[in-house]
Image (cartoon, rainbow, N blue to C red; front, side, top):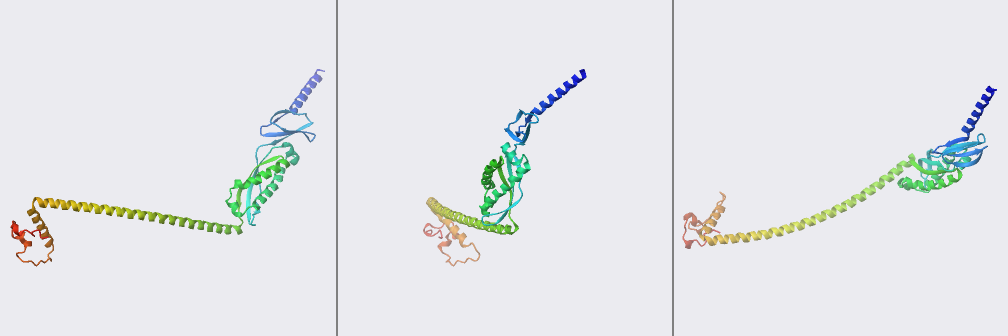
Length: 301
């Protein structure tokens, strides 16, 4: 009896432990859950924390609600002018409605990606079909993808219970038959811009040279005017000094001027003067103190 009672107690405790362990469950902070009763959803979007369920009757499915990445296949699209581009892209998405997501995909992430991928391809095909090749190359990629992201997000929320957060372009390539033509067009455009910049630079250079020449002429004219003024003032001052010196000693002044005349006249051996011996030009050579009446032209000038 005692052994049977002990076995019953142990069995009872084991049953209680089993019921307790299967009645409580935890939803992680990065997850959301739904509660099923024989495959039917009875509670949707269960938040993180400790929760209770009925063992055997209820089943819990949890879903990762962090941002997920879908790396799409490289695709070939046609632009507005029917030129082909090869686009490599990826999608950022997350689960926002666990119940709808479970109904659409049975909770399988790969199934969800198979449903999202063709919709992304369709949105990109429509977007590139509305743009010309030059717009695709020149336009910023964030702005290029804003329209498809918004439209696809609205559809996926209703159909799959997921949010499309972003569609990003990793690379846009051109087919080999288009690449050379685009490069030639870009090269021609750059040459045209270079010619415009050179023409603008030459125009600015001519303006700078003309302005510099004008300023040079003004400075030269001002300097010439100032030089003539100073030269005139110098000549006037020199004449005044000569006049004062002449007034102080007229005889010495005439003697000094005669010496300058001799020096200038006999500066070269080839110089030749034909004068009378008693010419007034030689009066200071004949006598250091000539008579005053002979000195009227003694300066030899």
